[in-house]
Length: 347
Image 1 (cartoon, rainbow, N blue to C red):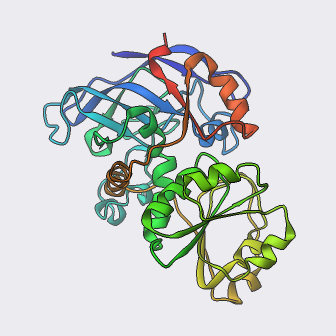
Image 2: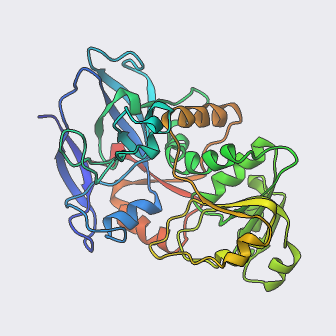
C-alpha cells in the first residue's frame, strides 16, 4: 500500500504532528498527485477540534490542494502526467443523482465525500492535503491554468470557489452593489472576484484596520460594522451581501442593508445558529440564502476566470512545522489572508 508523509491531528485538543498515512493504489479512474502546496482553511480548525461534530482520529486536514500529476489510471482521460492540478473540498459523490448530473456535486443527494474526515465509497476515511501526495478520482481533479502559480492557486480551491459561486449564481456584475462581510481568507477573495465581475464592492468589517488592504484588493467602499451609523447610512443599499465570517452576527441587521429583492448569502459556517427576525425578511421581500463551495464544472470556471484576471489569493507560505502556530494566528485573525503550507517541508 502506498504511503504519504503528513501532518495529522491526534485528537480534538492535540497539536498536529508528523505521521505516515496510507494512500490507496491508483485505480483505473484515479489520479496520483504530488502535492506542492496546501492552504489552511478555518474549516480545518473547526473540523479537527470537533466544533462540527466528533471525528475519527488521527485526521489529516487540508482541502485546498495544488500539485502535479505523477500517475494516472488506465481509464483516465481528463488528466495526464505532468499536469498542474487542484483538489478542493470533495473527492467523490454518487455521480447519479440529479444534482450530480447537473454538475452540482457539492449538493449530492446522497452526500458528497469530503476531502478529509469523510467515509469514501470504498468505506475508508479520507485524509487531506497536509501531506506529500494524494490519490483522487479524476472527476474531482481540476486543471490549474498556467496563468496561476500553484501557491496562490491552492486557496482558490475553497476560498475562491466559495465566494465565486454565490457571486456568479446571484448575478454580481456591472450595475450591482455587492457587500462582502469580513475581510479574511474568504472575504478577500470575494472582494477580488466581485470587483473583477464589474460590481460596485463594499467591505463591511468590524473595524477600519484593514481598510487600506480592502481598497487595494478592489473594494470601492469600506465601512466599520462596529459603528451603528454604518447600518443607518447603508440601509436599503445592496443587491447582494456575501457573509464570509464564521462567527455569529446579527443577521437581521444586515438584512436591513438589502434593497428590494436583495439577497444575503451565508458562506461562513459558525457552529451556533443564526437567528433571523421575520420582519427583516418580509419588509423588503428580502432573501436569506446559503451557498456551499461549487460543483466541479463551476470550480474549473472559477479557476479559468481567476487566471484570466490574474486573481490569486493573498498568501503567507509557511513550512509544515508552523501549522500549529498558524492555527492560533488564524483564530486571532493574524493572517493576510491565507496560510499556505509548502508541502516539500513535510519530511
